[in-house]
Structures are given as C-alpha cells and as structure tokens.
Length: 71
Image (cartoon, rainbow, N blue to C red; front, top):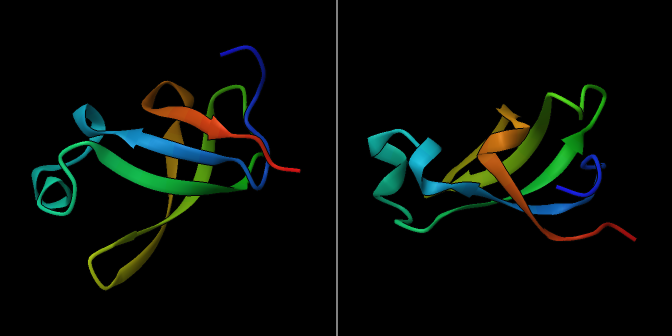
C-alpha cells in the first residue's frame, strides 16, 4: 500500500482473513470503514456489518485493501 490507512477510508477485508461464519455473508470479503487509525502502520479498527450484526474490530493492515480514500 502506498500510504497508511486513515479514518474514513473504505476498505475490503479479504475473504482469506475471515472466519468461516463470516464467509456465509460474503465469499468476496467484507466492506469496512476505518474508524481508528492510531496504529495504522500495523492495524486499523474497522466498522462493518455481518448480517444484522454491527461490528467494530481491529484488523492487521495486511488483511485489508483500500477501496476509496476519505475526503
């Protein structure tokens, strides 16, 4: 990645990094929004929805891919 992720970035959490129960919702991965970038060189906290559950979780930066930049 060319830059560290920042709050508000839209990311996809790679399917290979999802537990099997989450793959039930998407085989391609989960869309997420970065909500905390304090340690963005290592991990970011993302908001995402799986089914009816809203989740905030920390993800290793190698587990996510930037889709669009925050403005």
